Figure 1 (cartoon, one colour):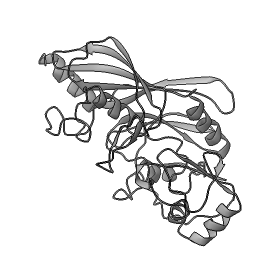
Figure 2: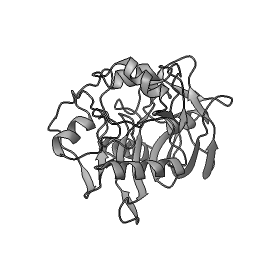
Figure 3: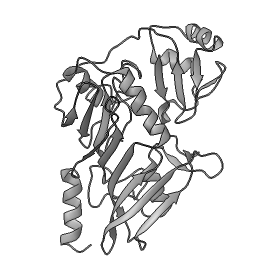
Figure 4: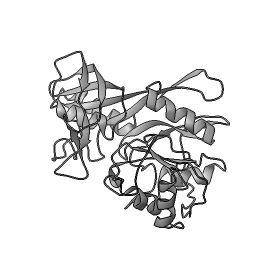
Length: 304
C-alpha cells in the first residue's frame, strides 16, 4: 500500500496522470485499471480516472508495486534530535527542501535520509522515504520521519485526528494588540497565483491557528503559533490574513527585504505525538535557528 498527500505542485492533475508521474516505470493505463478496480482511493472513497486532485487529498493505492528510484544518496549532515527503531526526529535547517521537486532534485532532506538510514518507510514512495509531514524550505525546526510503514500510518493518523501537536515561533510585521487569538479561516489555492494559498471562505478547507504573543515591540511582534490543522502555508497565510505577515516572507509579506534575506522568520520549535509502539506521548523542543535569533535580537536592541 502507498499513501500520497497532494500538495500545491500536483493540484488539478488527473489522478491517473499523477500516479504515472510518481511511478515512471508504470503506465498510465496500469493505474487506470487499478482505479477501475477500486484499488485507488481518495480520502477513503473510490473515484474515476478523470478525478482532478485537490490540495491535501489523501490518495491510497491498495496495491504493492515497485517504483523507479533515482533518489541520489547524499552525505548531508543531519541534526538528529531523537532516534529509535520506529522513527527519527530531525531539526531541519533553514534553506533545506524536504523532498525532491521541480528545481530541487538534490540537496534535500530525503537525499540525506537515504544516505544515513538503511530502513525508512516506503508508504510515500521512493522519492519521499519516511516523510510523514513537511515544513517549508525556509522554515526551520522539528519534523518526524518514519522508519517503518506501520509507524508511518500511525503517525499520519495523528495528523488527521489532531493528536500530533506542532508549535511554531514567528516574528510578525506590525504590533499585534491582542495577547491571544484563534484564527479560523479556510484555506485554498490563490486564484491569481498558483504558487500561493489564500483564505477562501467558500471553497477552502478548514484551518485553525492559535496565536499567542510572546513579546511585543514598536513595529514587530514575536509570537507562538499552535496548529490545529495542517494546511499548506497555513501560518503564513493566516498571519497575512490578519495583516501581520511574517518578517522575511516575500511570498505573503512585504516584497522589500529589510531585516533578512533568508526567508520567513518561522521555526517549528515543538513537536508532540504518541509513539507508535509504546503508545506514550513524546514531546521534543528546539531553539529557533541562528538567523531567527539574530533578527529577533536586532529588533530588541534597536527598539524597532
